[in-house]
Image (cartoon, rainbow over all chains, first blue to last red):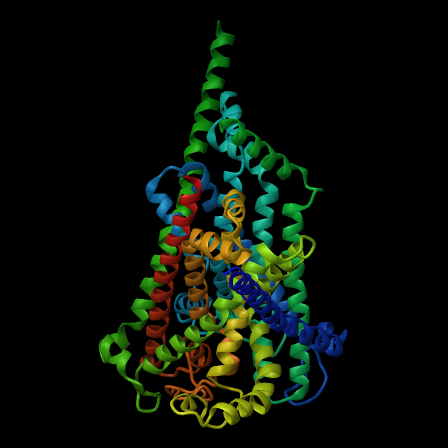
Length: 295
Length: 325
């Protein structure tokens, strides 16, 4: 009996370890291909040259880099204020409101909505009426994907602000908006920044919502009423395309994109957990302290 | 006297103004909260419904779901192949990803040495942040050739002659098929699922595990009889959450599915899913009924994933409530 239990223990734990190694094997394989191919094909021309006509080797993806930057920044610009506004309301005005508790759960579900569905919806609202694909629709689709993410993280971060800080401000005679503006937002700004960074990281890697909104463009275009190229959609077309140099440029673009997204995620993690950032450590500490007292 | 009253007036007017701002801010913030939590999902459903109405009226929902034809020339559209394709690839991906994710979570929380834990934890979290198009293009450019040239012929050689199972490995291995798609999809959801399962494992109070160890339980017995039952609804929630993700995933599957509207009979057949059909055909749809049929697929996808995610949320909430009580 004892040996059987010991054997079963050994067997199951080895199986778990094997499963972990199996999972990590694939993930490292992907990172390995990305690094090797990325370094091999990454050239400075990629960033400052526009593409050559299809089939002619050379050229770069300047149009896609610029387009991607425009779409992501505009999406962020639209999405961040709306997301933060909703998050503040969920946390500060409607925390104990049952109806808004349901809306908050729905928002949480919307975080994981299939992004291609959002693309299809924005197509019906902003592309069909205008008659042609346009960059603005792409930015709106990205913003819509980002809003729930920001709203949820803002709400969670504001809930970490200790109740005593609010009460102290109210005792001074402050109105609610003054409390929010001068006390709560200031206390939670690091947490909100983390949410924004994660939101930007998420939308900068999106492809599906851009396929039928901002579409693609073989030329540099700064006009938001016309199709705008993005890195991800260009990668999609290039990988599916027949030319070998297209594949090479797609690998280089994939490398740059992944590094950008990972950098954003790591920054977000550092901002939240780093010891250099005092305000939040203070909040968390005072939060746990007040909890200890209650117990 | 006059001075006092004027000061009072000013104080009053400031108070009134601040009160007005207060109301204004509340209404403004409330509108956006209402927008995110109610109007946005409502707009999504209404737009999808309006756009797909033509297809619903023309084919009928039941007939659309049971029709396996997808013929843009004859304008005969049925969603069976896409729905079945989505279900098959999601099911296979979950079949692969579930044991792996639970294994990773057990490894991180129970087995890994202390110095290794944060490294693997961070690696898993960062991998969950990699854009899905990267998984898709890696699947197409790196994995599919290996599968088509080496793995699938080998599988066919070893398993193709077995009765019943052999059917699954028939056909010409190309690498652009059900097997590769499910594999890529599973790799993509592993980090996400492992992170959710690890979080629920971490919720188990140390004292519960210690009591079991104190009774002489082995490490596996603690995991099997304390950790897993304790976190069952969290694990289930995590699995359903991952299923919702896998259903709606587009870029990881579009490259390797082959966009072939047929019901796959073997793991080596090319096929299509709802998201693949949308990504490949949306911009090509030249007739109203074609576009409307695609919208109907999008509506089905949205509703199914919304319901699944709601169930997952409910189960995770139940787990959290139990811990707080």
